[in-house]
Length: 237
Image (cartoon, rainbow, N blue to C red):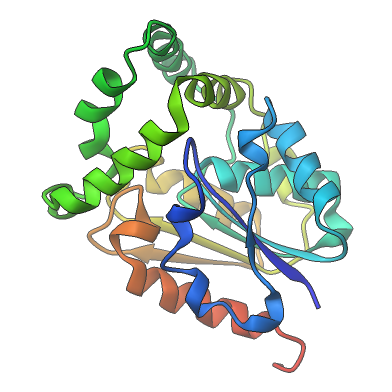
């Protein structure tokens, strides 16, 4: 039986997945990895996930976590029983985003974490959810808890991430691709590109949803993810 490993996004932790954990079939024995908090590149994060959990794996990654999942599949395709890729991107960093991250890192190094993050929180959400102060505060708390050092290290990892498009077409495991239809941080075109590279992929849109789909629309995410996970169990055809 494969084990399900959840992979959080940039500066996030298990709280990103708290609405999903209850719907996972117990046989998949889910855990939330913190490899991204302990390693400095997408490649070494992926290697740690593989080294720290034996046997076949189902990897479910959001945003940067999806990039780690795709890299783990490149490193050990024979161990991957399934990939769920939520609001993520297989392409390398663009020059424009590279410069934006570099500028943010300079501010983080000066200790300006809240001043950088708080005004930009709304861009991670659909406008309807951005108006929910409790929801956006919960996300802000997660990022601030991670702190400047993690934001710097993880942004640098994203800036140097590999081009997953070079190997995705060779994967043969089941793949679930999911994206908020109004995601402004990882636009829907990125999910379409991933699904186009993987003939076996299922592509689902989460309506009226931005980048933080596990927090914004947990019911819709759980419906798609739960159905897909149940179909991975050996007892199901």
